[in-house]
Length: 331
Image (cartoon, rainbow, N blue to C red; front, top):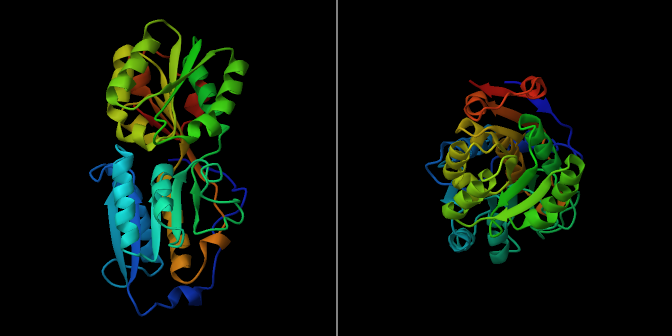
């Protein structure tokens, strides 16, 4: 599979002396992990595996010199996230890996001292996690998911694969993705003016509301959907993909998980790579580095995945511009 390499604005995770890596502390270090997906989700397992493998390559082995405390919040209930966040904080780990914005927010409520490394967070400054990308300044640092302007790219792809588009909706859960309104919506509203389509913001909180949004888009021709970065929607991806297929609504997603599960088209960050990159930051913190001094990193690998079977079932002709750029085409 081809991968486009993007240069980070701040730079990759800085290297440190090999001798420092080789030095192993005497005591067992406790590493907390709070995941926003279901424990039985294979995509979630692949991401966590990339993180643990990265730690092992740096000398940290669960059951030997490290103890992993993993909790799965499943992005279904904010209260559940907060319960697991408090549970992890009460264990007083040496560092916590926080998956997504709502998980990071839940952990931040319970500790301002335990180091936290976040992954898959869209707007760390706007969310109040860090003061500055270059110098976070507190107990939190990590790896951003994507920039707000990316919604314009998703709309462009939607108009390419569905050229009759006249209405474009963005879907998100305001409880798990509150950043959409301030971080993505302004760029979305500017983009729809450029493409001369109507903009629709559609907050959802349940499978029933997801189905209602897609049904409403299908009542008239020319409706399309962009599924925003949101752990709730990833967990609830099955009804989105099924209803879109039943109603023949074209949908563009932010992560390849959707396309592999039957969604039409995805473009976004290669998320397994982000988890892999998080391991060196956790390693550095375990060896004495402060999150305040570790710059927030921007994504370096992006991927486009096209499900050609879904395109065919929707009656869409995939343009060469998308076929040529796709990293993976599912036949």
